[in-house]
Image 1: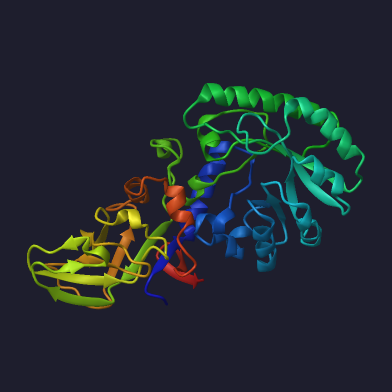
Image 2: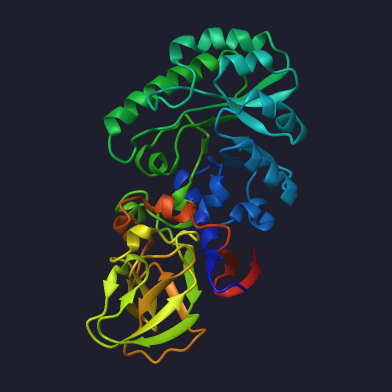
Length: 362
């Protein structure tokens, strides 16, 4: 086992799914497992994937990786792919989001698609006024089978009036599409939409961050009591005593004012520990919050363990969801917890736990 690990509690993940399912009723859950399942590597855990009849990713390459794990059910690619990926889409039996007209015209292999509708995100999608002509183009290409329709709410956590406007546009698009296609999947809500926008039009939801136990907005846990599933840990690899007036790390960003005991831990910005934590970040040692001292290096950083009876090999926790939360770290980095999770690098070993018992590592 490596010194630095991201523990992923699969039992808590399943409990979160069960709570989400109870909240949305009989709607199909299409879990968002893009970006290595937000950094958790659940996308590589076949026993977890097999709980779902369909899973969603962002790229064709991510879908192929899931196929290669042995997952045989439906995989949906949210983003419009390129025509160069068509053979892989066909060969690996991948369903894709479709909104780009030139791609549609060049499809010469049988594929399944969900129509993406532009309702106000202005990222990708078919505009409502173009939908009928787009559908006419589909009818001219016998290789395309439409199985679903979807959109994405831009502001379901902050602007319900705008969300209503988006939903009304989507509702009109669904009515038009239903005249021509048998829609197996109708979906518009990701985590924020699930929590804040009740509607009966869709039969599928796309939970993301809430599956992993983290709030997309403050107070989300009051609606669904989700449990954080990850803990980031490392170990002390070096200890030293230093004198007053000595500097620590690059550019002498920290200079001691008294004798101190300093520990080096093998996690740095190449592992996902952001440099923005330089001077403000903390970790947990023996149950205490201890400061990160000096600039965070690519592969390591230094922490203050003065007064603690520690030794090489002792555990250090970066976040435990209690004393230090993922949200707290994200705030100090002036970003969101989605980004912190999804950018923990492949150098960090993932350890799947069933409650507190290790079952597999990747």
